Amino acid sequence: MSAPAATTPPSRMPFAVSHVAAGFVAVLVGYTSSVAIIFQAAMAAGATPAELSSWMWALGIGMGATCIGLSLYFRTPILTAWSTPGAALLVTGLEGLNMHQAIGVFLSTSVLITLAGASGTFQRLMEWVPRHLAAAMLAGILVRFGMDTFSSMQSQPLLVAAMFATWLAARLITPRYTVPLALAAGIVCAGLMGLLRLDTLDWTPARPVLMLPEFSWSAFVGVALPLFIVSMTSQNVPGLAVLRANGYTTPASPLISWTGLAGVVLAPFGGFSFNLAAITAAICMSRDADPEPQRRYMAAVWAGVFYLFTGIFGATVVSLFAAFPIELVAAIAGLALLGTIAGSLAGALQEEKGRDAAIVTFLGTASGLALFGIGSAFWGLLLGMLVHGLSPRRV
Picture 1 (cartoon, rainbow, N blue to C red):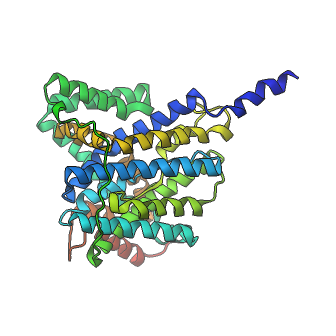
Picture 2 (cartoon, rainbow, N blue to C red):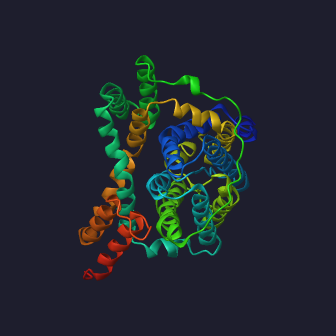
Picture 3 (cartoon, rainbow, N blue to C red):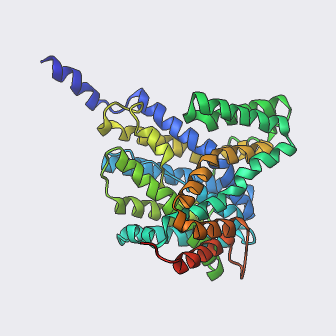
């Protein structure tokens, strides 16, 4: 009689404190890791403060709705996110484009993601681009952000050095919180140095701004297609891998389709893409979230609640990061991407027979090459695919 009494109540509890904590940490890590890159991407498209606020509203609402809806429906911890590497691509890819053209890029990418999920061709599409070339392209896109961490030391050596030292210490002591702790150190240091512009903070709720799309072939080929490839290979593939590694067999097609549809609906308001999370998703799938795997979906639901909150107060998030010195934003973005850069380079150069194609893809992408209005991510991948296709096949 005592065994049922001990095991039944936990399964009936709607949530636990550990669910709330895991959801909060996942959102905190996700935002502090890459919201600065979203800010830079919006600026590259010439966003006004109202449009930038709308971007944050759309992203928060989209991630919140998909986290809550998919997690409750599948009873699985489904955590969604924006594509951080995709946002990094947009920082350079949107230069020279106006906001209406950017919205056209977002819609095109989301339609491609939706079709990839709904048609069941997700795996075939991923196999078309060799994994090591996708990794090389991703590394080429992100390497600029890693270098900016150290170049920013020239103008603010004390601030960036304090952030780097904190990141290094946290990496040894508590690796999960390296980025939030580095950001906290940067904020404290910037405050002590009088670099924070807190008078710019805006506590009013965000308002969505409808931005009509404008389509062009060059923007589709040069930005939308690379954004689609990066989002699928660097977010959805590892996101599914995290699910499988934790024993969840949720079908892939509906997950990809629904995140794509969320992008279609919210792209006109600045939601550039929605996809499966990987690193932050692992937080909601750990034993710390709940000892019972079948109840961990509530951690993702709570993450969705926090996402909704950040979306509603998107203007506050934007104004908060606008109050930070440029060097702090550059440093935290680079530190957050160091692991991704290292992993991408390792994946790109792992096999000796594919290194020539990988290094061509990496250097072509990192070079900033732009021809016919098409950005370097496309040309780097195209040249790498050419080298890959002409390389002798080794048995």
